[in-house]
Structures are given as C-alpha cells and as structure tokens.
Image 1 (tube, rainbow, N blue to C red):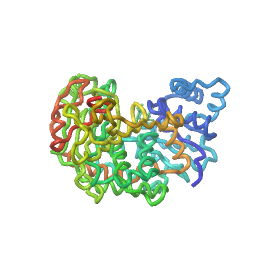
Image 2: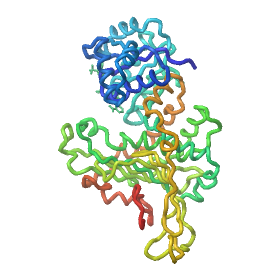
Image 3: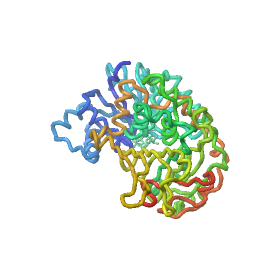
Image 4: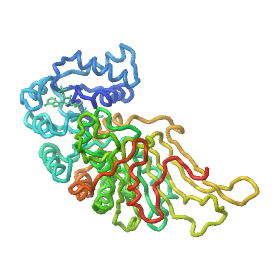
Length: 463
Ligand code: NDP
C-alpha cells in the first residue's frame, strides 16, 4: 500500500490536535522523514500563520523545543482551511488547498457527532480518493450506533483504509504483551486454563474528571475505557498465536477473543461513583454515571473456559496505575512456607503505567537459618534496556500513513466489544459511592470467586 501523500487534520483547533497530533506530526517529520503537507480544517477564523503558531506552542509544550529554523521548515508544510463541516463550500476550499494530493490521510479529531458529516463531505467532494481515514474514539456509544458508523465509513472507504484508533494499542508496554507471549517459547505451555488461575486487568487513575464533567457524565467508565482500551488489552492477553505477523492474522485472533467473550451480565458488574463527582461543573446533580467499574469477564474458549478475567477501572483511585496480571495456580501444597506469610502464587505482571515493567513474581529462599521462601520479582523494562520508543500517537499516525492497520481495531471486533457490554449498558445496576483515593466501593469484591482477591498493584504482602 502506498504511503499517504498528505494529512487532512479535521479538528485542527481542538484539544487532541494540540496535545498529541502536532507533536506527533513534528516528530514524524524530524525523525522519520515524513514530509507531507498537513491541511488543518476547523471553524476558527485562522489563517496559515495561526495554525503554525498553534503547532509551535503544541510542540514546545510537548517538550520538544526545536530551534527556529528547524521548526520553520516543518511549519512550511502546514496550512489551514476555515469552515464548518456541514458546509459543502468547506470541502471545495479544501480540495483547492490539496492540489495534486491523491492519497490523503484524513484524521477525524472531532466530536463523534461530526464523523458522518465529514466522511460524507469528503466523499461528495471526491476527496476520499485513494486516501485513508482515521477515526477517533468513541467509536459509537453502543452496538447499534457502532454498526451505523461502520456503514457510513464503509460506504466511502474499504475496510483496509479505515483506521479506528485506540491509542492504547500504540503503547509500547501493550505491544510488549505480544512479544512476551509469542517471542518466548516458555510461556505458551502455561498460558491456559490448566495453569492460569485468573487474569486481572486494572486501570486506576488517581484524579477525577476535573473540567471534563459534562463529557464524562454522558459516557462513564465502561464506555470510556473498558469497552475499548481494556478489551483490546484482554484480547492480546487471551488470543491464540496468529498464523503470521500480518495485520489480518493478528486482527483475526483479536476478533476471535471478542467473539468468544460472554456478554457481561448485570450481576457480574459493580458500578461505583466517587464522592463529589456530582458537584463537578456539567455533571447532573442526580447522576447515575459510573466513575468506577469492576466486572468479571468469561471467555468461552478451550484455552480459557472457567478462568475469570477480573477487570477494574476507575477515577479518583488510590494510585495511578494500569496493569495486567496473569496469576498462575498455586503450588499444590505449601512447602517451605511459614505460618505468618503464605506464599503468593506466581504471577506475571505487565505494567503499562506508570512504567513499562514486566515482572515475574516467584518465591526465593529467605536468607538465614530457616528454609522458607519469600516473594521476589524478576523485572524487565524494555525502555530501560533499549531506550524509549515512540509516543503512541506518533507510532499510530505513522502506521496509518503507511497503511499498516495491525494496531487498529477492525469492524467486527469493535462491534463484538460493544455486544459484550450491551446487557449492562442497557440495564445498568445501581452505582455505589466510594471515597476519593480508595480502590472503589467495597461491593467490588462481589464479582470475585470465593478465595480470590483483587491484585494490589505493585504492593507485595510480607515484603
Ligand atoms: P475539541 O472539542 O477540543 O475539538 C473539536 C474540534 O472540532 C475543534 O477543532 C473544532 O473546531 C472542530 N469542530 C467541531 N465541530 C465543527 C464543525 N461543525 N465545523 C468545523 N469544525 C468543527 O475536541 P477534542 O480535540 O478533545 O476531541 C476530538 C476527538 O478526539 C473526539 O472524538 C474525542 O472523543 C477524541 N479524543 C480526544 C482526546 C483528548 O485528549 N482530547 C483523547 C482521546 C480521544 P472549532 O474550535 O474551530 O470550533
């Protein structure tokens, strides 16, 4: 597939463009030699100088601080088209600025209500051409709306030119799950219901909704991060080995996990809301939106039948951490253990945030006279060993420009991910209040099997 010959940035004056896309475009220009025209489009009454100023501030804020000559060379490629997306004249002006570009990458960094309008505008003005489209999350708000959005996109672009972005998949530690599992032979024999007792996925943020109250009150934790980011992570943890490293082989296996996942029943979910959420600007005083969700997911496959996947996501929590833990079965009977410290079963931790450490927890002899073990972690950090990789948006933007959709969600898996949460989205159980700085409501333990407990991130008992 050819490399995109231009970028059309819808939402050029927006927050996402500022925080992520201008810095990513700059780094691609500087480090990867991707030197294509970038045409920003939004309503703001800007000209070319304004978009260049905006990009300069965005790049500086992202910590790059290029010198003036360096940046000027990058900025020369930036230009701006002002207009409302609902106005066909906007696309006519855009066509003029695009000149001979035949394969534009249209990045939709815009409110979801505008996705359809823009895609149809591109089609009507024949600007989809041989190009590609990147669609930001949220991809629909339920199964029905996701299907409708897919139909709109597929009416204008073939599936292999549609890039449904989930920036989680652009993160190095998330991709590291694939390398750990499939580039090392030792894990595969253990990676199944015979040896794995449970899988825990946690995405905890130690801050609240801050100024995004109105947005969040309409969305909630399940739609915001569980249905997309955490399901993508679970798919990488649970998938079968792909038959090759091609995009379709990988996406086929992701899709099979989504299909095999049982819809989450309402009694397998606990929803929580942190104390004070309703006082934020834009949040309904009677809001029933969850800022926390804990649930059990079952994957009905030969590999995973009976293994609970426990998922927890929340705001205003005790720590800022995202991780997945694969907990292996305990040794059949305790040996070399003492009464005051029961050994924790072996587990493999993939930490995505705050760092990229993968650690394997096992027992080692406690120095001294007694023949007893204590838990220790074998740790690997790819960034410490090899240096930092690209930022997620930089990586994904480059992939989309080059037509590599390995790390983008496919139509079927997006729809299946919505199917899994349909019962709970349609008939949500009540929310339980929890204190700011906690691990969510106590009721969260109800989703666990007897004898199981939530994994406390990075906190080891008896250390
Ligand atoms: P903003 O509200 O900050 O920006 C929206 C952009 O769309 C602005 O440039 C605005 O232009 C433009 N726009 C909206 N309506 C029109 C219209 N009718 N005609 C022309 N331009 C229009 O949104 P964000 O940048 O925060 O988010 C964009 C998308 O990215 C959303 O889908 C969001 O869910 C997603 N996203 C955002 C993240 C973030 O960190 N911000 C993170 C992950 C996803 P103007 O200002 O000129 O009106």
